[in-house]
Image (tube, rainbow, N blue to C red; front, side, top):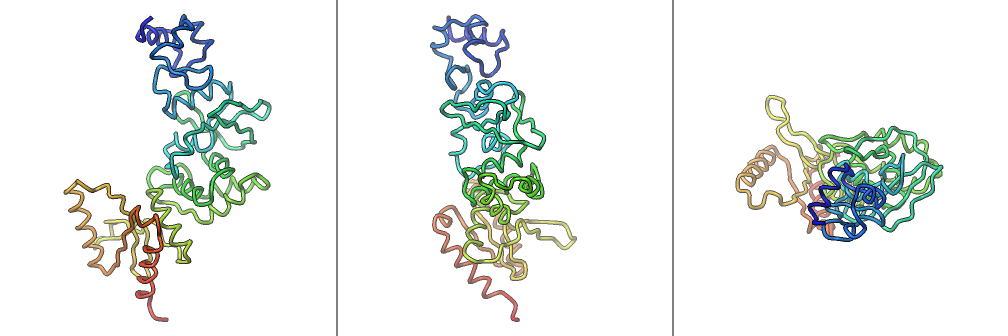
Length: 304
């Protein structure tokens, strides 16, 4: 049977994006065909004819193994919901929740959770339902640093299309006394800010605060003569007219965007602001950018 024929069988039998060995054999796929080209093993006993490395495919496969009522959870659910993760490592393992009455799944590449849930699950996409994002964040706290938890909290409460508010995280923490990771979650919540735009902005803000500087205002609006918002500063100290921005260099090679960026910077600086820009290289050793911000603040604070 050619690869296309296997695909035809899978399609006609409505096996879906992933399917178990039992489902495939019942649909007419032979054991030899399961081992043949075009059929990929996602986890032991679960197959796909799609990309086996895709997170949504691996999530579906993990749910198929975990059984009815299972939900994706933790950083897996957050990634599928579009929350920016601190790095790619959390997506290497699929996190799945099962009811307390069920046994934990023990398959390499899958991490099982069985904690008590109190919030409504969230539909991620067709065939994938997740633990509520606030509880996913709390689950992530079991094996995540405070700084990375801040990145996740900021991502959940981002400026564009936020999934929840910081009050939702406060609420889920109220009933979490004694749970593993709750101390880190509380520390992260104190540092999190709503309305951010990128994980690197969060990392930059944490570098400033971690060096003893005041926490800047996130996405501070700058208004034009008619009162409308013309620009946002990534981070700002309005009393001192000091702005701090992260430059991801996404405009490189785009002359039109570079001209807009230059016009924006001139407009802001013409109104008395000192703009300090950081890049990924600066964040590798933030002492330089922290020193620049500290000197700018010291030189611009009004006399007592």
